[in-house]
Structure formats: C-alpha cells, structure tokens
Image (cartoon, rainbow, N blue to C red; front, side, top):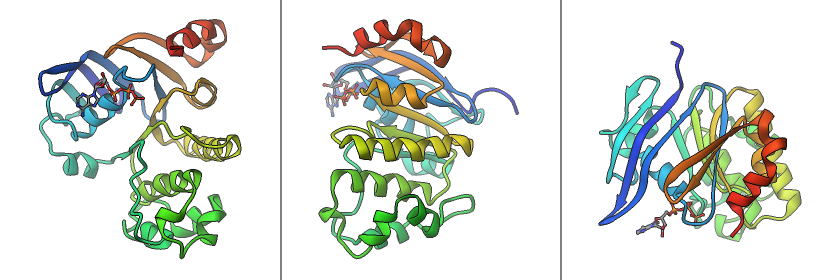
Length: 233
Ligand code: ATP
C-alpha cells in the first residue's frame, strides 16, 4: 500500500471551551516506534485520546491504513487494530491476573497466554492474585500484555515507565524491543528520555499542544541537550 500506517493532520482537540491541541501533525510508518515527548500538560495524553476517539471533541484528520477514523466511535477504532494502554493501567482490579489475561480472547496474531508467561514469568506466578494486589510494575506488564492478546497493529502506550523501579523499566523496555523486532508499530508517550531514546525511531516534541520539533534516532546524540531542555520544568 505504501504510505504511513497512521497519519494525523491538523488535529485540534478541546475539553469543553478549553482548546488543548493546536494543529498537531504526526505520522507513524509501518513497523516504526515513535515517541511523543513533552512536559506535563503538553497534550501527549490528549493526542492519544483523540486518536482513539475517546476524546470526541476534535477536528482534523486521523487516517489509519488510508482510512479516516475521525467519525468512528472508539470501539470501532479499536476494532481496526489500535490499542491504547492508558497511564492509569486499565486492568480489572477485582479479577485475578489470569482472568485479566483470559478475558480478551486471543485473536489471530495476538499473544498466547504461553507467550505472556514466558515474557513475564511473574504473571504466571501471580496468576491467582487479584489485579489490585500487584505492584505497579506488574500492573503495567499485565496491562500491556492484555492488549497484545488482541494482536493490535498499532500500540499506544502512555508513560509505561512512570513510577517504576529501574529494573522493571528495563524489563518493560526489553519487551518493547522484542515487539519492535516483530515489526509492531508503537506510539510511546514518555517523559523518561533514556527510555524513549532507547526504543523510538523518531521523537515528536509537544509544547502547549503543538509539535514543535521532530528528532530522528540518528540525530538524538547531537540534539540531546535540546531534548532535555524540552523536558525540563
Ligand atoms: P501529563 O503527563 O500530565 O498527562 P500530557 O502532556 O499528557 O501531560 P494532557 O493530559 O494531554 O497532557 O493535558 C493537556 C492539557 O489539557 C493540560 O493543560 C491539561 O490541564 C488539560 N486537560 C487534560 N485533561 C483534561 C480534562 N479532562 N478536562 C479539562 N482539561 C484537561
């Protein structure tokens, strides 16, 4: 087919009267990992919510595999193969780990339970524990693996490293590297530059609801000071 997998043009988004995204343009090529970086309140989460149709008050064009998603409800957007792991890690806290994993039936191309357990053995060990009893890192692993069961074409991850111990961040980074090698396309929202630059092929910098810069992997070394400045408070 050629062309980007996801192509977002002139995206504007609103919470009531509050105009939060001001003409965001971005794209994700097939197999690419793209990061959205920026300070708190820059509009990163709003961009993901707008793409997923969870925030409906938006204008512009969001094309996925060449087709316009803008008018579709969020469940139909998800059915096209976009999966979002929100920052608050949407797992079902009253269900066990195993029930959380089994609830979304595995779809063709999606992760089997066996693959989930091989990647994160702790999920097997904790299989009978309720989601609410997991550590933050375990919840993040579960939240990501849950959506991978459905075999998404594009994964939208909101700050997967936030608040986690370094060893867990490393484990999640390793898993994302594996997904990357498998050719999964990802949008990664991050404030952890080290994590983002390890994984992403390209970075979009958001400031006050606008993309103000774009940095490719090979430019990161030369532009590290700029990237740090964009993220510093
Ligand atoms: P964070 O890391 O803090 O989530 P972010 O870059 O993801 O930052 P957004 O959450 O997208 O930023 O927020 C963008 C702007 O929209 C901020 O000014 C925020 O205060 C505002 N905002 C976010 N959610 C709402 C909401 N539900 N209602 C009104 N304003 C909101």
